[in-house]
Image 1: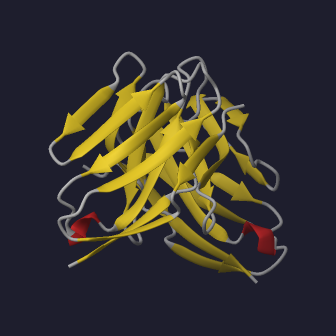
Image 2 (image 1 turned 30 degrees about the vertical axis):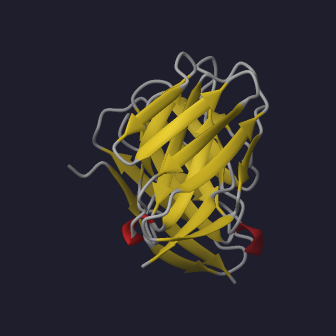
Length: 112
Length: 113
């Protein structure tokens, strides 16, 4: 089955800095890579996703890059703000199956 | 819009007791999932369903059971609670396959003592 590794487990940045979270996956057939943000006491919420037919996708301060050859993808957050503080999860799936495999999460702390 | 609703939000069980975690969604989604979240371990899939009457095991199904009699509801049953089942449980749903957005409930924090 799929295995998703996520690094780092914690990341502390100053407000205004950039943050990068990296994930690797094992199944070369995976073709969908979402990122979820989980605020304290809440369920995860999708913030951005990318499919295997593109290498990069951007939405305001958030971007995701995908390298299918190396089987890794990354989340980039620019101009971080305190409200970006949360746990971020990457995930991967193959449309031929029915389930997502999640990484273990990254706790991002943005200090004012 | 309610989305995915889980009840209860918190529960303390004694070892050997049983309970049902309720999950309902109002988005007419075919796919529904149950995950457990343990500190530093991410989200592990317990069971999932691709439609009413169809369920399948995920990565960590032991000690749990599910049913899917309607499109809206996907309850999770713990028959003989054990301390290892202390966790936060999340229900989620998606429209078709998992390469579309999954919507999560607020979670149920369960403690087994």
